[in-house]
Image 1 (tube, one colour):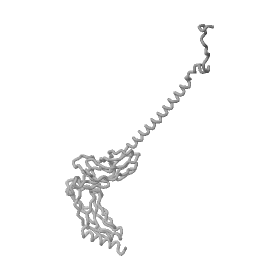
Image 2 (spheres, rainbow, N blue to C red; image 1 turned 90 degrees about the horizontal axis):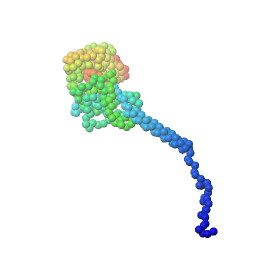
Image 3 (cartoon, helix red, strand yellow; image 1 turned 180 degrees about the horizontal axis):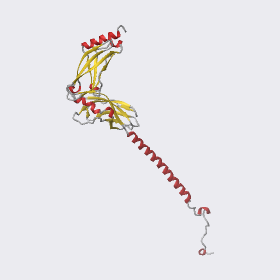
Image 4 (cartoon, rainbow, N blue to C red; image 1 turned 45 degrees about the horizontal axis):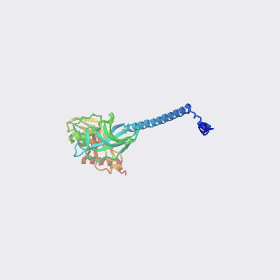
Length: 308
């Protein structure tokens, strides 16, 4: 065979036969199943995350829900100006579901004196009454306030946020701001003139007539007339409270009896305790004069005799 007539060299099949066969196409059924599984997992993860976010929002809303009401004014004293700023103690009820901290009070018609010392935070558990105090209050005597208004309270809620909330007053306790109005009035408008005289005496009691006069220009409500002298008691012979018109006077008999011989022999100067209005700011005392004190000493000797 001539070189030019040679047929092309046949090398045959190179490599394994199975490597040359076309590969099978991926199964559509398998890939779809994995794709749906992935989507399901993503949906579940998103749902859990959504629940966590929703719960967090609910918790934050609950922590921010602060509901307080103001109650009884426990004490109030001071003047209306910067010379002697007022101080007040008032009960507060937490109606919310979480504990809060009370940081300060500001009744309507007042401002807090700049630089006034802050009270320690007062914890107010849910459903409980606490007594909150505020010093350094300057009263605006010209401000108009409701007779049963509440008080603005600066709090730190359960989430740690500090803010001011409005605590409504309870009608049976009167208004918080009203208790501070005494600082706007002169002593003549607040306290009565008092005199006392022994009018009767027997084996077990003496009667002292206490005369109250109203030197002011407004009616005066007398709500208490008694004594805090140890070992004796004094019962008023008039219904309390009663109103004393301006410029008028009234005599109220006080019947004194011995309740504890040991204490009655050790008491200091006996005195009459009276209250004008409903608040401690209007609490006053009147010491008995020498004749009334002598009558009490004789009463104690008659009742107690040689008893220890």
